[in-house]
Length: 125
Image 1: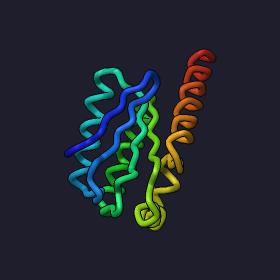
Image 2: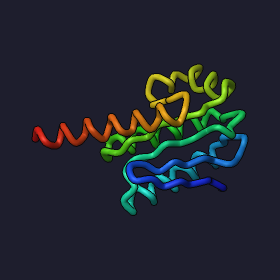
Image 3: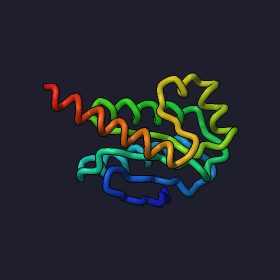
Image 4: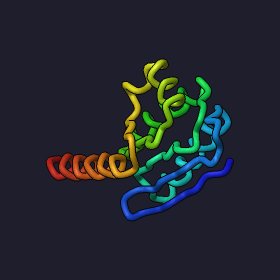
């Protein structure tokens, strides 16, 4: 699958090029994030600006990816979600689990706040 990947100091932004967020695409995204986590990238913003539709299994895979990231002490935020995709996510109830930000700047803010929270939590231990 084709992704645009932009690595920054505190996060990696991944933008799928495809307009359909399928189960196969979300599996590929999952594998990409897993490999990047192993190489030291701890925080991810998934930019879904190109997505016009999403398959139910893709939503499930995104929830699974979200849970795996947070169990590993990483951040994962979805951003720039178009209305039909957001509606499908809300209909599934996954919006209650996933971190969703309307724009990239808000996604960056969420990641930054989570980094601070983890740092403070680790200091207290």
